[in-house]
View 1 (cartoon, helix red, strand yellow):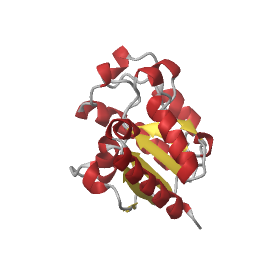
View 2 (cartoon, helix red, strand yellow):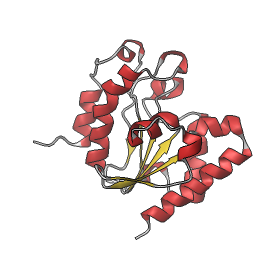
View 3 (cartoon, one colour):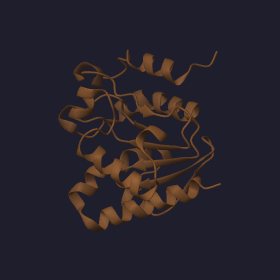
Length: 187
């Protein structure tokens, strides 16, 4: 029997496979349309996401929402947004390899069940994980990559938090990546 996205989310909410479970307020599984053509994958929840139980709800999320609307013409309820790790790393530190490995089956289930046509990876962690590479985001972005296991196209771009710190050039590059995502979804 194949589980639904809601059932997988309920299982993830009880997960204790890594140490991140000890410090979380709640699991931040994901949000959006369960049959979306477009999926965003970030790194992990921050403090505000941990409080609300939803991905990208802080300053980074507001930027993502704005750029998504302006460059793709979509709102977050028309796509699906998830993270590599589902629990907040302490002090917003980078997720450890064992934490990423523990959460990987949740993300793989999300991708399989949603079956998006386009996945936009936000930042280094999701891009490196989904492409199985050590190459950084500055070299990966600007291109599209086929994901044969998911029958989707991956478009890596900067994490919105990096754009908030980096300024105009990074925002322009992220915008062009989102245009690439829009074009990849066109029939």
